[in-house]
Image (tube, rainbow, N blue to C red; front, top):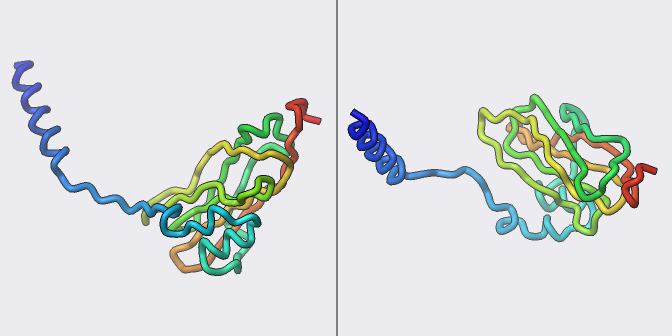
Length: 150
């Protein structure tokens, strides 16, 4: 009986391996390379989405007011907006873009990431809605230099 189960799983695994896999993710580093070399948040957003016009609502960004370690700043962000993509930017490092997520129609925006910030600054999260509008949320925080929270 165990042999039949093993063979059955093997046939299923082989069929799954041969099935075509379609990914909806876009490689933004290849399609929009200027975003990743932009030195200001406004410039990076404009290069990413073609406009800088945003509605500052609908996006919640949470992080500590003082980050003890600039090498791993915890950032949580969420939104109830039906979205195509979510992008994270910061103004503390030389390049502003942090990451971009491509979303499916049923995706839930509730992320927790860690980013590196060499100094105090503002984190901006931009949600590209399925309605074509850009929504944003911001969080300003201090980075304790030397890791002493002060």
